Length: 193
Image (cartoon, rainbow, N blue to C red; front, side, top):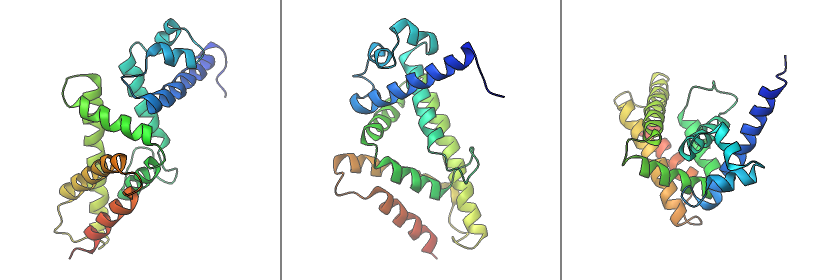
């Protein structure tokens, strides 16, 4: 059964706001994008936008959640992650320098305060590390990775490498092959015996 009426229109408008915010945040960055600009691009007044998202931070966090949802591989369940999926996300990020810049800046800024962004990133990393560690253990069970490798350490190193490679790539986009390097690290972990 399809959703109709005011609720459906509200969901459509919410998607339009998120699309506009994603585009503007990626182009200009979080700090240089105003709620007024996002509202204008979405065809709303500032008050109209604030009806859907009460703060700029709430809007930003919803943009990040939506971006995570879009990077879900249809072959995997929505709430799982794997090393292959991490590598795929790194590969997709190479086509979105504005979003990478935004993600790097906001994740670093969130470490300094007790904002909603800090909670979002802390929960996201905890979940991601758990998922990657579970995938490493699955590879250990199938004999692909030495059972003496600590799965949590391997997960932490893979995620740290992915994050660090994003910074290196932002500074030298033509000289840093993010997916190639994270793939090399993964292959080194699999071949370490």
